[in-house]
Image 1 (cartoon, helix red, strand yellow):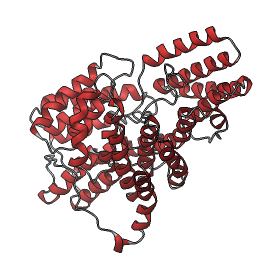
Image 2 (cartoon, rainbow, N blue to C red; image 1 turned 60 degrees about the vertical axis):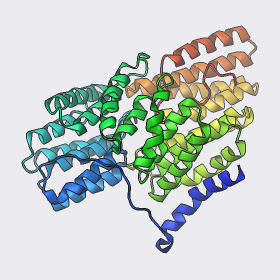
Image 3 (tube, rainbow, N blue to C red; image 1 turned 30 degrees about the vertical axis):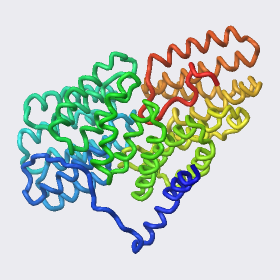
Image 4 (tube, one colour; image 1 turned 135 degrees about the vertical axis):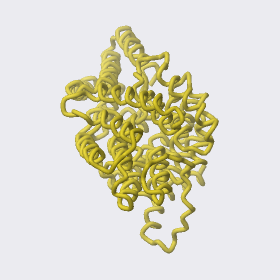
Length: 460
């Protein structure tokens, strides 16, 4: 146990120092898996283009963007490289509502793609498909745009049935449009059926196990992802996200030590690469696993380490598998989890709110404070934080973020139930919690999080 904690802290603190002292670096050869994306670009850029797509499949967006730009520097007529750059600006398909700077940048790239070289009909179809995610973003809501992207990718997939990359990206588009309220998991299973067939034929492809983990990232489906979870990090160990993604499955099935181990590796690699949002995201999953196994001392060390990693985070940076908001979310979630999971109510009530540009991030601390105050017998203090939760929920409704507005609303319901309990109306509190639990059951956790801070059905 002590050795594990020491290793974790060493990874988070020593790796950046090694980057400042190159003579101590002994980097392993890059290993990203095997990808081939046919293009009409100069043959000399073929290997570089395949590397860029491999990085794209592992959500190493900033590195992939640079790789596509390197291709363009060698072959300025390579229009399909502009498609790749646009894909990096869209980023993680499961990351929620896109920030305006990413949408503006992506739209500009689409304009350049359409003015570059003489792409083939297939390459023009790829460019037209990704354009759907950015076109009229000022006036058209995100879900409408991603549904249009899915339809465009389906046309491409059916027009070019031998294009395995089209099939992989289409499957990802199918999963991207799945609604958290659909407990038949129809979209996820549709995507998985395509991916399973592709992966059997291409066992070293990084995107296929990655996207299978996402497709199966739901309690009833998670055991189906174990083979992918145990393979992905071995296929693409040079991508920090590939080291983290197995934890999505391990968390779902309760393989806590496996989750801890892969997140230690992921956070260390992310810090090495300057991907601080990715590091914090991995740390949140790691803390979750520590707390599930009673390793409170290890969790406390992560609570102490998170602010140091947060201090190096640029929340507006575009390029990590985990966007800046994921780092902010993790930094807020880690201390809240640590307090609530241990029933340290006064500690939870004393958490200090830190305003961000993301209401659902700010809601984490307000929710933890409300629960902590109510469980400490201070319902009046809890009401103040519940009122703030209401304001945050209204902001999410205003920007048409239906999923997060629903989640924040459920947090408010849970908090109200505990306030009611603190006031001595226990039967009413139980009924409120039952309604909150039913609402929570009808949705699902976001990929940004290993799980809710305090599930309504879980006694706290």
